[in-house]
Length: 145
Image (cartoon, rainbow, N blue to C red; front, side, top):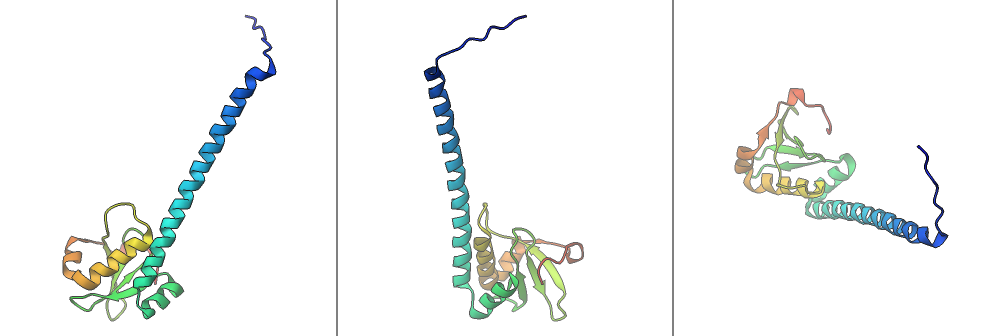
């Protein structure tokens, strides 16, 4: 089987190349805008979290990446760390931990999740823990603290 090569004038291919370049640029710009929006949402979430932290909590968060809160009902200490799952540790006097998992619905920036957890524990600890999943601290790697 033989194929013949057809030569077309240069002006026929230029619009196609131009359209491909435009499409590529549009896709790259869309990706950059989307990534920029995510980064902005993360930065806004962390800024809001920092605004709501007490001076001691803010210092702890800036030094370690986590902060501690007191339960509004029991006065127990809880450590909230920067992950989306199993990131709340209940601490006793000996530093023993019980891991808890709860948070707002949706894919939210971590600062928003941590703030929601702080507010929930400080204002309605019993109802929050009644809805939360309790983890086994012995099976959980020590990620913060």
